[in-house]
Length: 337
Image 1 (spheres, rainbow, N blue to C red):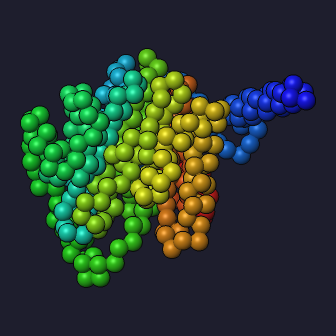
Image 2 (cartoon, rainbow, N blue to C red; image 1 turned 135 degrees about the vertical axis):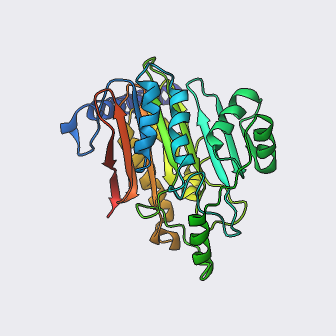
Image 3 (cartoon, rainbow, N blue to C red; image 1 turned 45 degrees about the horizontal axis):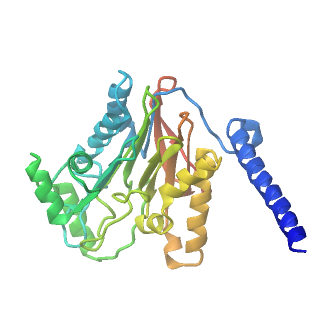
């Protein structure tokens, strides 16, 4: 009887494995076959760069100046997101970012290369380009993340200069908010969030970057998903890359970007993977007060340059640039109108 049970269990296991393999093959085939489903994907040749929101357009151009000349994806993503960090009109990233509830601009950023090296800074003040500090952390320290005063001290040691990041426009917005002090992290087309960027270079290597000033009027010391490898950004050079935007707490709770990459590893297309994790977040927050304003969105790119995106609510868009596609802004597919 024991021998018979063993044989039966082995047979059932083989059937289950075959079903999983068939599912993976089905996902792969549907990703390359527009007629297989309603999800829209595009497969440009490398190099290619994608980034979140309309401030991704100038960021893509800066990245393309490097990628188009055969440069490395890592250099491209750093140069790309620096444009948003330096733009005082971008109220959710770097210089000009809206402050926390104490009136202080604090910045988070991370970067990751094709060898799975990563660097990150959190709760950094007075430094305009946290993404470049994050790269220094990756390349010059044995650590992945530095935070607060330690991150600032390291940046100054590396030659970065202290600057006042609170602009007059941001200060005016802060003083207006203080009249009610009502905190609700609305993140959508009317209040753009994190800039995240993914790039594939001519060598077939991936890199990613993510940088933000975080949710406006947040509690002093709050850290979102943007500096957290696996939440705001993740990549595996054998599989693909993913990055997030939106309410950081929701993305942290699901290890969002890492899960998107793992779904791609299992055969899901970039957009299918983004959609699955977005739906998972919606399920977690179903019936909660946060669902009233919750927004999350993901961008993803596979090793072959296929890209896709999905978000919870309409209003999220992302920018794409490749050798075949001029710099374009695309409205992401969404779950809720």
